[in-house]
Amino acid sequence: MLLSLFPVNLFSDNLLLLLSIVIITALFVSQAGYKFGVPSLLLFLAVGMAFGQDGVGIRFDNFDIAQSVGNIALTVILLTGGMETEYRSIKPVWRQGVALSTLGVTLTVAFTGSFIWLLSVKMPQALPFGVLGCFLLAAAMSSTDSASVFSILRGSRLKLKDNLGSVLELESGSNDPVAYVLTITLVQIITVGNAPKMPTIVFTLLFQIIIGVGIGIGMGYLGRWMVKRIRLTGSSLYAILVLCLGFLTNAVAAHLKGNGLLALYIAAIIIGNDKRLPFKKDVLKFLDGITWLAQILMFLLLGLLVNPMELPKVALPAIQIAVFMSLVARPMSVFLLMAPFKGMNWRGKAFVSWVGLKGAAPILFSIYPVVANVPEAKEMFNIVFFITLLSLLFQGTTIPFVAKLLKVGEKAEREVDTMGIEMPDEMGTLTNHIVTKKDLRNGNRLKDLGMPEGKRVIMIKRGEDFVVPEGNAALMEGDQMLIIVSDAPNEF
Image (cartoon, rainbow, N blue to C red; front, side, top):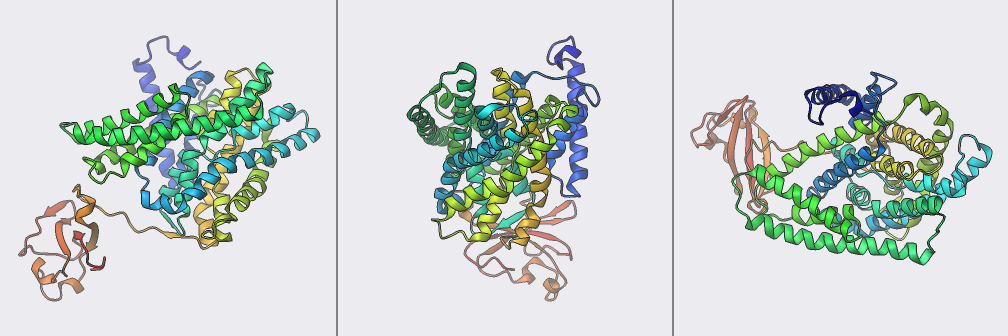
């Protein structure tokens, strides 16, 4: 146990020193990996493994603590993802997203579980699970991981066509209920021997989803009202309020036997789409920082759980299962379910099939059998962990390439530098412009630019200094201007 190495309280200097060293190491490694297009989440897992018992020597094998930390981290990740999701982006594709997050997960479990069972007949020593165990293994890794999808899609600065990004984010943010119910049901059947009937399983799933959606909508609008009615002294307090509302939504839904993560995601979308949310940009920046910390801690902890010396034993079956899931099970599910939707061509379906990323969620689901003492559960955990590494390494690193190959994406526009200014959306759109020699041909004063109707310069940045945008302000080549655009075309 990690805590046994430090016979002091949880907040001891030794433990804080250790956590600081591990996290700083992970940040430096992720920065180096960014240059080579390696997903940060994969590197966080690798750092956790490096500091584990087969590396630096930290021994951590408490699956209960890892499960609790992982659930808290997923709450933060889904809250931030929902806050950044716009109605207009998901409205055209909500049917596709819901189909993939429900029937898509079920089909993936059916296809993959059948393949694992057939594989276990040929490799009984490597896959000693039995029929139910094979489908439990498939259920644990059936959902796409929200942390991986949000992080990689937004970090790669890809602008995807036909709302493909919205489909993938909506699917990954809402597909946990089906995977969770299937995993828990199979764990119950294996450990207790009390197999619930199919109507009971379907009812349980529908009940979780209905309660989750209902609580999510209710808490979302309650949160909107609360955030705008409470008068707080700064943006940080509003961010803390939103964060606590997210935890409260998850807890209330779970207490009522609904799906807390689904409720949380829906509530976050509703709150985040309030155009009059106080200090919205500052709140999102705060949540983004907390999300990165949660991801780092979660992936480091999951990396510490695994024993790298045990992974070669499961490498062969894990590789075969990963290839089947990526190239057969996931594409079959996507193409079957997306067939009725005319807005997605074969290129889009192929791309959605490829971005079936695994990450923290499948690893966390694979912890449930371990905690429940399911036979051979540690081998299941190792297989899911190995498949997650393969998914992040091969799928995560090739997403920009595959998008370019299938002609479904292009580089997103550079993010606007708002220079710390927060502007309500209804006032217009903020954009940047770098002053060129051509701009100064009629004079070097701001008033000489002849700004078109509907555009106003609200700030000028020169290096690290700022210039007040008065009419007589002298401009220099390379100055960066922050411009607000109302109804005029977004061109200088």
